[in-house]
Amino acid sequence: MTIAEIQQEILRMKKEQDVCILAHAYQGQEILEVADYMGDSYGLSVQASKSKCSGVIMCGVRFMAETCKILSPDKKVWLPNPAAGCPMAEQLDLEGLRTLKAEYPDYTVVAYINTTSELKTECDVCVTSSSAVEICSHLENDKILFIPDPNLGRYVAEQLPEKTFAFYKGGCPRHIVVSAKDVEKARADHPDALLLVHPECRQEVVEKADYVGSTTGIMDFAKKSDKEEFIIGTENSIVEHLQFACPDKKFYPLAVPLTCMNMKITTLMDVYNCLKGRGGEEIHLPQNVLEGAGRCINRMVELGG
Ligand code: 13P
Ligand code: SF4
Image 1 (spheres, rainbow, N blue to C red):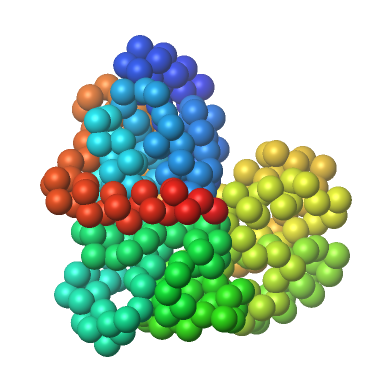
Image 2: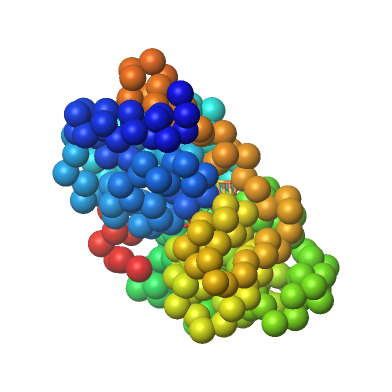
């Protein structure tokens, strides 16, 4: 079968089975072409809560499929490749969180959505990169324990100097490999380009950017801008998608290692096999996790962003 034939079969089966396909923007082009919705973590959460289909295939990483299940517990939710995890989401376990909370007893615990559902049961509110500043600004408590990404946390803290932040020592193993040296080189190679970066990058990179935002934020900024060249400081699929969307503009990766193999592990064949009923993992979560993590995620959706 060709890629086009597999895609046709996926489109036919998802309609027949009343399944919608949600895809994070770090997925490859061939998956985005069969998806009903493509977006960043916040957009996927909202879409998951709105979808009218009885089943959802979440093309992304495990915490995204779990978030989808928590927001739509009556739906069947599948992760097409069970090995697709996010290393950052695994960095802090419940025991570690409890130790941190004991150190900062009067702090509100803000969990980046890149955390396990189990961890979210003991956090106060969830945020994504696109909603973090707004949600933290709405919190009554001025003391915030931000877990697990200190880079996103520090970026949020800079926007909200009136609040006091404490951080964990986690971080995205992909985004943190980029350094100020990469910025210098990219700027020298493309002097007319704007630098757009994700807040999971290190502070030394974020402070040199022309725009800082989520995956969708970066894509929207580049599409609307009247500039013609952009250096993209996030997962390299975004370079490819923007080049498809804006063929008259030029997009350059900030660094070659900015490729998330955890996201890339999901293939078009995984989606196909999932619909055929011979692959993928249906997400099941215990009731206490559905309720506890649901409180944390629903608070994010209520506070908006
Ligand atoms: P956003 O999709 O919210 O920009 O986050 C990027 C990411 O790392 C997803 O895991
Ligand atoms: Fe996790 Fe980083 Fe990959 Fe996002 S880019 S899924 S945070 S490892």
